[in-house]
Amino acid sequence: MKEATKRSIVRWIHLVFALPILGYIYGPPEEVQQYVNMFRFVFLPVVIVTGLWMWKGHLVRRLVSR
Picture (cartoon, rainbow, N blue to C red):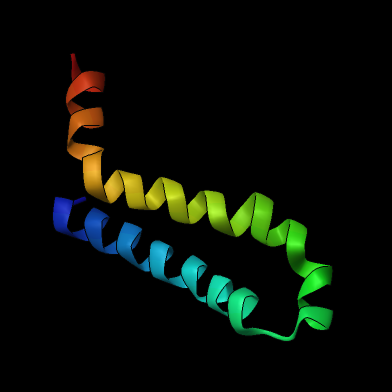
């Protein structure tokens, strides 16, 4: 798989998992409370990991390849 394809997949995962966070921020508090654990344990960690991977993934790949 090409590096550009991998980058595109990670970017789309990051964007798709970031959209519900916007709903969490701007949604009505009564409806958002039932999904708080999904945001806390699924959406936010995925967005953080993919963001860090896009930012510093080249260093992780270099360390793993040694």
